[in-house]
Amino acid sequence: MMEVGEKLTRRSFLKATSLGFLLIPPLKKKVERVSPSVQGKPKAILVDVRRCVGCKACQVACKSWNNLPAEETEIMETEYTNPTSLSATTWNYIRFEEVENGGSVKWTMVSMRCMHCLEPTCVSVCPTMALWKREDGPVLYNVERCIGCRYCVNACPWGVPSFDDEAKAIRKCTMCFDRIDVGLKPACVTVCQTEALQFGDRDEILEKARNSGAPYIYGEKEAGGTSVIYVSDVPLKEIGLPKVDYRTPSAFNLELLKQFFGIGIVSLIIVPVAYYLLKRGRKTE
Amino acid sequence: MIDLFGLLRGEEVTWGILIAVYLYLGGLAGGAFLSGSMAHFLARENESYRVFARSGIYIGTVAIILGLVPLVLDLKRFIVAPVNMIYAFSHLPESMMTVGTWVISIFTVLGVITSILWVFRERERTVKLENVGERIYFESVEEKVILFFEAVGCVFAVATMVYTGLLLSFARGVTFWASPLLPWLFTASGVSTGLVAAGLFTPIIGILVPRLCPEFRELLSRSIELMKVEKRVEGFDVPLMLGELILVFAYLLSVVQTRGFLNVVYGVLSPAFWIGFITVGILIPIILWLLLKLREKPKLHQPENLALIYLGFVLVLIGGFILRYVVLFGGQL
Image 1 (spheres, rainbow over the protein chains, first blue to last red):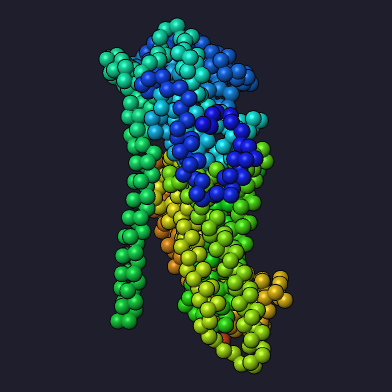
Image 2 (image 1 turned 180 degrees about the horizontal axis):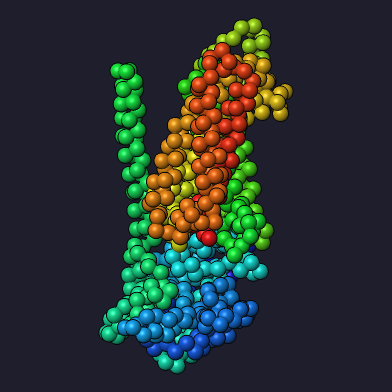
């Protein structure tokens, strides 16, 4: 079984090149089977925006557990968000937004991170299957298969994967799969003092979200559903979460292809008819 | 705020200028191969069109091979782990990039085979013609073999052009590209640029490699024949350019709510779009075509008219590249 970080040996390369075409289905199966330790049902993280106080402990815990270096950032007088986006060395961050609420302005803090989609677009577009979805939730990456095309960077609706130019690899949140494997919660959830971050089975997390009384739930259906669920008392668009439609990547691609071929078929009818009419018009002149 | 040079190189985007070149050469290659093959199917007994057909096949093959250079240079892990490229064939049919890897690989192989067949076929034919002393056109097995490879190659040439658009459309994170019209726009532009590239390189091949391709040199000396071919190429290209014009505005309207639309239509890329693509790449070539249309017939074969046609071709080629650049960068800025 191919594990994260397994090296491509000369033998496996020769096998791949010699068998070429025929080897593709086995290669595919090999990766799909990867799920080192599935701990029961699919997991999810709940982000309760109402409870977040913006302490950034989750940011620090993520850096600490994953050995991520500090990032040089600019401190701006008008901006508490720091750093201001996800990157190869920042896998989660707290976003500070001033939101208008009933005539007054309210500070809202929200944890931004990989959504660990149920059917991830990054996994769908990756030509080498370097990215894959583990059955219990985390979307993971195998550097030993990656070619550095960065298709995942452009394909993710949340712009999560980042390419690390120094390490020559994609970097993103792993949902602390190595902690989940030994029965621990992700580092960010563990340190959250206000329970703005919670971890559990996705079914239970969704149930909690629905029963939370929050008017806005995000992640239940977006891009076919995600393993990070947000609950909020302010519209999520106002706190920096983009509007993503409910289609899974396969539904999105299929619809696009249908429209593409539809345009082709319509053009095949319209163009010859227009040409014929134009020619007939010229003849009558 | 990035400076113009930074913008040109693509410092702030994921896919920069190298991918723009790759998409451009991919489209051009497909268009040139398709144009060459079509010329061969439709007018294979005409010596001049045979030369044009060969030009299309050769340019298509060279362009698709050249296109691999910027692609490989852009792959950030190619130097670290070049053998990983083999895995790019593995994610069928889900990943559009894998589909493209197969399509381009097969197209490249078909292009190389067809080009080699053409070189040997024409050399053999020239020898035969010299021996017999008269021009004989016959349906030999070799001709059918070339036609077979061209027919199959055409499928992959079209697929390559479509792929350059679908690759972007499937990148869901960039809403500016998520339009079914984009692959059609890139296909129309690919056919247009490929067609004119085949026309432009017909005399250039004759000048660059006269010994290898004596028919090209011979066509150069028959300027009236050459003019006829190039006029026909231009005649085919004008409707394509008009189609591109319709498609580009339809495409922009389909993504009107995106930031990319603002970047391209009003923003930082608007000079490149309005001047580079619309004016230089489409309107001026159409005006040049109209100018030649208005000239009287006896004057038509003058060398300056041929120069005007070639100027139009060069502008179409420039416009085609700017289109890829504008669309690629517009979505990412």
